[in-house]
Each structure stands twice: as C-alpha cells, then as structure tokens.
Amino acid sequence: NIRKLCAEIIGFNERSIHYHQRLGFRTEGVLREHVLKNNQYVDVILMSLFNKEWKEQKSKIRHMIEGMRV
Image (cartoon, rainbow, N blue to C red; front, side, top):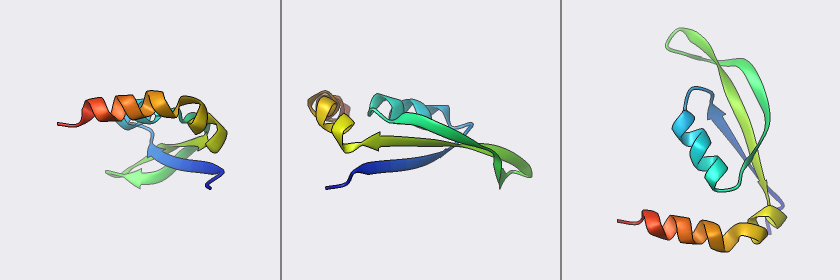
C-alpha cells in the first residue's frame, strides 16, 4: 500500500536514469551540484512512481523484468 516510491540518482548515471524511466518513474526535479563525487559536485536526479501509475503498467514492467532474468 505504498502511495509513492521515490528515487535519487546521481546525475551522470545515465544507465540508472534510463532504467528507472523504463520502470515508469518520472523526473520530479534536480538537486544541482548536490553531492561531492571524485572532488566534483554533481547533480542528483529526483524521480518518483505513484501507485496508480504502477497499477496502470504493472504487467508491462513485469514482462520487462522477466525478460531480463538469465
């Protein structure tokens, strides 16, 4: 019974951002230069997925996840 699931992703992690988008997460905002990584401040991308959005595409996501199993 989770209403909203939130994720924080380091801005340069394009692979993780794309993966979350495929799961149905949407970008809510950017924390600019929020964390220090390798002596450089980088952005953090804020993403979320609401329960109602999950229910709308659950079967599509389940099929995608099952296709990833090795």
